[in-house]
Amino acid sequence: MRYVLLCSLLGLLAALPLAAQPVTTSTGEAREDVSLTVYNQNFAVVREVRPLALRRGSNLVRFEDVPSQIDATSLALKALSDPDAVLVQEQNYQYDLVNQTTILDKSVGDRIRLVQTREDGSETTLEGVLLSQPSQGLVLQLDDGRVLLNPPGRIIVDALPEGLVSRPSLLWRLDAARSATYPTEVSYLTDGITWTADYVAVVNEAEDAVDLTGWVTLVNGSGATYRDAELQLMAGDVRRVQENVQVRGVQALSALNDGLRAPEPAFGQEAFFEYHLYTLDGRTTVAQNETKQMTLLAAAHVGVERRLVFDPQRARRYSRGRGQGGGTQDAKLSIMLEWENTEANRMGMPLPKGKVRLYKADARGNLQFLGEDLIDHTPRNEDVSLYVGDAFDVVGTQIVKANRRPSDRISEQDIEVSIRNRKETSTEVVVVARGYGTWSVLGASHEFTTVDAYTAEFPLTLAPDEEVTVTYTSRSSW
Image (cartoon, rainbow, N blue to C red; front, side, top):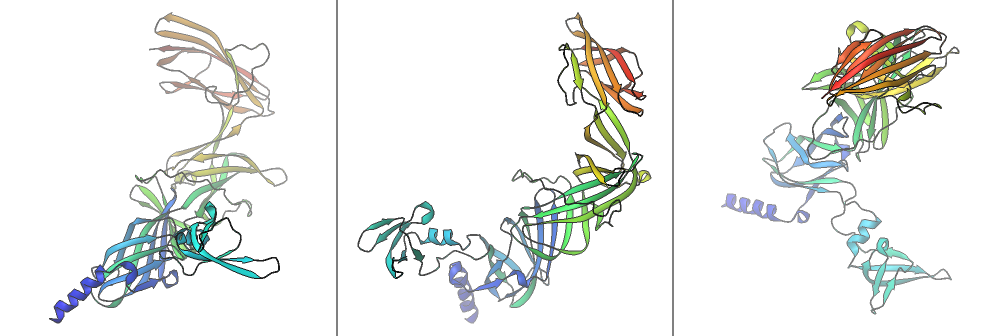
């Protein structure tokens, strides 16, 4: 009989509205542990451990201090001491926070008081029903039927409307197998937190090597602070089907305060699934609305190659000179800096996508900015290629000397490329030729390398103040 009565009482408790049951509150101060895995796609996995004191049967638990951008559908809850002892029966995400707007929104239709100050400093109080709140134009209906529009005064609400919370919270109905305090791990996804990799490369005097430092720039706008957290960063393109997040760019903090000497990396790296996972050595606090920067990696004396590339189809063009026709094209030469991401070249580490900034010390020892470029996720043993600017003293001109149509499906061009080195030192230049359809170079004044079916490259070495002219004939058919 007592068993039937107990079951009836538990069933009645479960049937009660949430607001009518006693609530156990867990705040952020109760956290025993917290860890973050931040993705470079503007979201993170948060794992918290908090003790939950539960009675046997149905319990209402308010889980406070969660981020305002939490994905409440992603939550997983596990009692660490006994995973099968606690089950989630119902979950509500409450984010209607207490503020002037929400209080007045929920007070529309209720009685309020309006305190007004007279010219002599005394006060008078009006009472009535709030018909519209101030953000929409305050409308107050007095007890005598008069309606006041935008009346001045101080609004007093007798009671806080139901449903408002002081901080974003999860409200659970949990079923516990027995009365106990359970160390509970709660995991969920939240948006609004992201990281980027920013690299600083300092070129040596001979311009054949760089000292490279990689920095993590972590931006937290999720709506919560994570104190003394274990921090991991996931690098890779993880698919999320529910949304297409536009990540706001961030600026790297200064990484040049220590001259050419790079700090020790703060993260260990490991391959994980088809991505790469970086784990911070130690713990850190990730505060709300904070931008934090930490060392990711460092490599000294990485061998690089600098190339000047004349590629009229992709280069930045400038105005044609007087007397030049439509077949003449002046174009900037692109400054390319390239290196092999190999152990033999003092690298051989996965590089998360990010911005690379290039510097070099002048004759006075002052570091000067040379340009920047973005790299994608780059595995080890792959090449890195940076386009950092356009050459000043090396210029080029391409002229289409002749167009021929041997048949309806064949086109031929005679092309002349002039490269002029106005520097006081010799320089290496690559002239790029491109085509379409079934394309080939029929003849050329200089040796070239076929890169692919539509691209050929002419490597040149120019002495100081030398001009070199490359001529070739290309054929396209379709």
